[in-house]
Image (cartoon, rainbow, N blue to C red; front, side):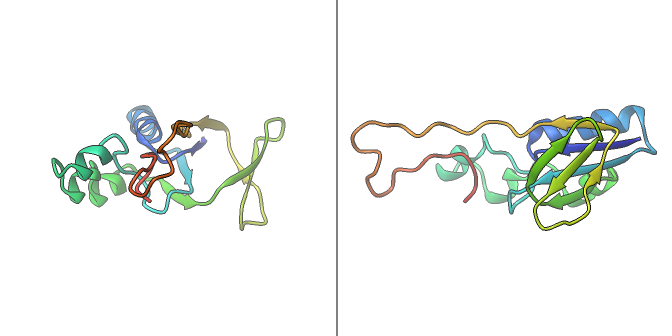
Length: 129
């Protein structure tokens, strides 16, 4: 079985853990375009206040992730062909085949449209960048 998960957040990692609990042999590919991979996005606010250190933002060690036996592709999905079970990705010519696809891209906060949101030091806290 070929599993593909789009999104590198907590839902994607939880899905990989769930798959591995019932299928040790299946191929799992996670696709994400965040340059930092999996980290605790909710923890960012606590990092900024000094309540968490930067290592605490990464709740899984490299060894823990390696034990889940999945491939991470740092790309962006440009097209899904549901009939053929294919994904097209930026920078890759050949489409990626899948048997099961999970779209777990999460959400982004909408920018506030009130006076002052364009002032220096005001930011939307969606990701580490």
